Image (cartoon, rainbow, N blue to C red):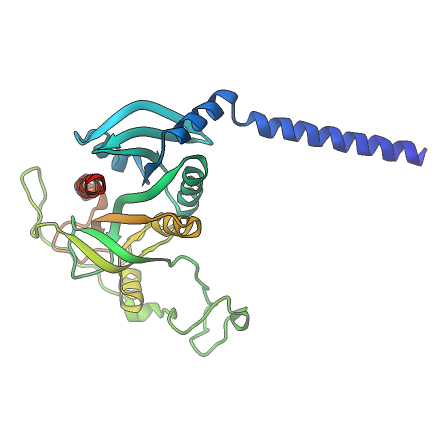
Length: 296
């Protein structure tokens, strides 16, 4: 009787494994697999990775982009094919957050033959010497959303849990909120369809950018990360794109236009949604010119 039960269990387990394998194979239809194979044969491509629709739309409507009217849906993503200048490109939208950006970039590099990645979008500005509308190209990217939040009453002299294992450090990252608190000021000004920014936007290379899955709208935290880490653009995706490309040894560049100064402090209105379209258009202009230069 025991042997019979064992055999029945083994047969049931084998059947479950077969069903799982069939489901895994069926997750990608034969038609989609065929499209991916054909796309690989037509490569290599420049992969263009975009966070959101409002950043993608200006590129789709830019006269320098030629759509191939060809899209491959895969795992909740849409890979759009076309050309910028003489370069074949694949456009893919990630959605918000580091994890979405990482998964999407990995899918792009796994499914298709990619010679390089261009990632662009808008970003919060942490650098007081830069202005809304400027387009930044950082040399380095980091993630600054992995923090140890101490219990109330602890300070820089109190060792952190797991610090001895190397998980956390107090060397650079200790933040005392009182040292970075600023009073909110109501600045005079208005914005309408005829109002321009005070400073002409420009393209600048900067030392560092940083990413975290948090929308930053806090002047104290902005001041802290700038003073401690010298970061300029702050977003929610770029560090993941950079990490995946680095691991896969695929060249990449990240272009981020500044849409606001998180938490205020700018002569302009600080509402990010007001300047989103301006910043997105500026980012697309730089991306187009960069890829056209690759063609040359």
